[in-house]
Length: 433
Image (cartoon, rainbow, N blue to C red; front, side, top):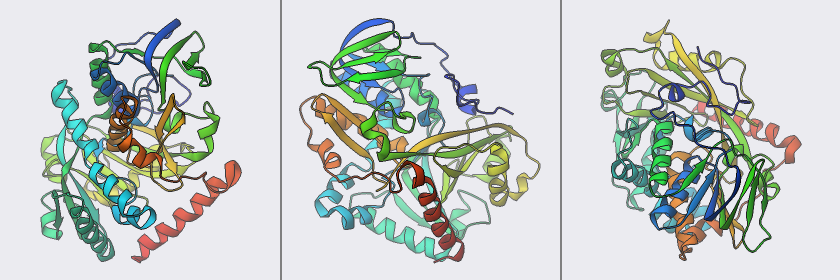
């Protein structure tokens, strides 16, 4: 069984790392490089930003402290889930109709960008369409009905409610009473999607440097300088895309997000017949609990199953011990299944659960804090920041002008504060209220 070693700059021992289709090692930054734009971080946000800019003719340099897709972008559940971590109805109540319309108009764009990239650059990342939301209770079914109704006002016509028998066409677990399918969702091999976009950037003249952790950004200069241990990039613009692994490298942003760990396991090969027995339509699934589980089958017919969270980004000592009981509650027929891979990874949580886009000055931009919805929203972020640097910041500023706050409790108490809140919502899920 593969286990993670977070201290390492190499990829964790995940199924994705074991099946990566590009093992090219990019060079470490050594010396001085000049670029139009320096992008910090080679995850989905950084790669999306760099590729959009390279397509517009900008000279880009991407700095990655470890390997391409080393963080959440190369470790996640691989599910293309549309929207944000807060429903459009919540966004409208909190920020007003104008903001809701603007964010709603962009809410499907991230998934579309992924599909466009796969087709345009022939990226082999095991793309499959559709995703399903599975409900345990009648309350959750009512919430899905409300969600479908609200999404329709923002032009999403790909949702279909499923009763118990209809859900069986997609997932055969007896744990659920119904659900909803999103025909504009899907699932992918996330690390191979990262690697494919990196190759696309390089094909357009962009440069990607690995093992090049940023130590300082001299953002006060007319042309900001981004310094690493062995070199620096001098650029007209800088985009900071470190997300949950940014740490204290950018002090101004440090207290605005909190790393949250989620755990994933991948079984031994089950065979196509068993996988179609579990997931007849080969869709991906996430349940409707506050602390949700998510699962799907891989291209080589294994089951990837994830769930659980650890506020503050601390990883459990034994990932299978945390996740396997959830898998067996969903699919008791898999009792005795062997786990071949187990890993963990962090996503960045914001207080509002809405991503933070903004500027540290007119030359240094940032985008992060997707709060569990990063696969799609990070790709949208890359397009929006590229538009802003290219002279049209209207769409970027719909996000940038939203208020955001430090997580309450400060560095000492923010973890227990969020743990207490999560207990409350888990209790509500169990009681069906």
